[in-house]
Length: 397
Image 1 (cartoon, helix red, strand yellow):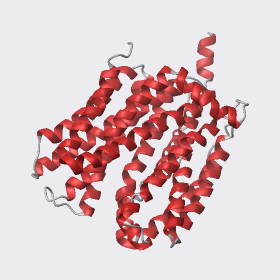
Image 2 (image 1 turned 90 degrees about the vertical axis):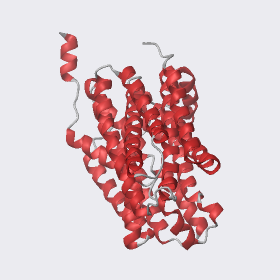
Image 3 (image 1 turned 30 degrees about the vertical axis):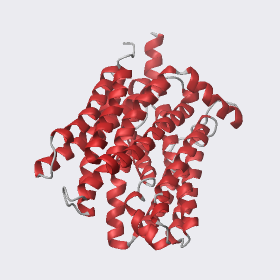
Image 4 (image 1 turned 45 degrees about the vertical axis):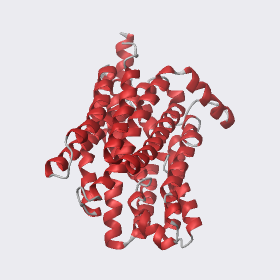
């Protein structure tokens, strides 16, 4: 009877609040990816050399990585709503400054700070887990992550289209306005969540290394997703090069439309969350890894510049995004079950590790495409999740 009473009294969270969190995560995460298709016009107007142009994206990613390790863990000791709202207000100011900056050095500094502020999304994900009862935690986290993934996938085509109509600075003006409005909405809509952990910031950071060393589930899930996300970054770094090459002759607009195809893969996130709630994390993980492997095998089987080859690439993009989305949520569902008082730190470590895998995948993809072409890139894309699959085979049932 006591167990039943406890289960009935467990708090629930409204679908409307989950929708707000999902939309917020998508809007925030998009800031990391708006600049990727805009490197050319931004560097040209600000006078950045071709060699330095890549810093526009790289510095925002570095800022994001720093934020994962030094800001996201604050969710375990600071009131979550205030932390998110403060981060968004600062980010909105930086975006507005970036919109009218004429100095390349100042713009690159702004890019770093935009990445730093964008980690507010990763404070909201464990926040959603805190609000959710155990029975629906995976589903709710999956729904929130689907919003985040949609933001990531839609950011590039949206920024390309806005730039086409109004110029690249309009992207930053509009984003600043949206982020500011979002901060006001979250301040009004989110319930307060004050952690009970009472430790100093220095102790908080010091505990993260201990958590990494002593949490096998975190280690395993981070390794899985580092390899998977490496393939994701490799694919989306190199496929635009293939599509605009003489093989397909697509324009930048058509490449942006192709990127929209993969958006449907985000639908796998809530499905993975539901499977996790039913205790099917292990088989669902194997399926997710298989999807990623198949997504890179298909373009090697069907080659050339035919319409069928282009359709095959589209199918590969969907399978890849499905596998990555599902595996991400399965990993977060696993680590969020380890304890409410350490969720933000676990999430920061998890994200930082696989984000590093993505950076390596992007670099490896660019190098492979330059030296061996698209096929060489795809072989690396197969190898990364294959290694994860071999490691997965060692997981105890």
